[in-house]
Structure formats: C-alpha cells, structure tokens
Length: 80
Image (cartoon, rainbow, N blue to C red; front, side, top):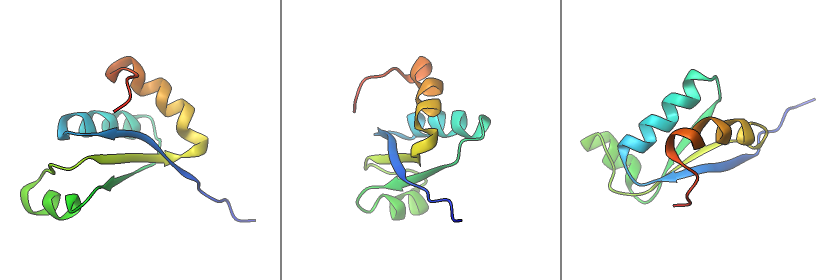
C-alpha cells in the first residue's frame, strides 16, 4: 500500500523573515514541508538569496492542523 501525500498551502508569505520563521517552527517540530516560489522566485532566491515574489509554504494535509496550531501563536491567523 502506498501512502499518498496531499499537499495544501499552509501559508503564503511575502518576505524572507516570515518564511524563515515558519519553516524553522516546522523543522523544529518534525513537520515536512515544501517551499514553492511564485514567478521567477526560485531563480531570484538562488541568485540573490531572497525573492521579491510571494512564496507558498506547503504541508501534507494530514499535518495541516498541527502546523497551524504551531504557527498561529507566533505569526497570527490573518490571511495573506
């Protein structure tokens, strides 16, 4: 039997600070994630170390509630 992974957007961030804060929380708590850059954000991040484009932080749907419980106290629950 194969376990399928259904990715959902945990949060869309607009800056490096928020992205690094959220990904650090997820790493510290053992929650796997994927960072999906918009536009040419991946190339910009490689060349300049940051991206002016919005970035999606994605987690498995099964981890979504746990991840939200961890990040909301720190970054709030407003939608971006």
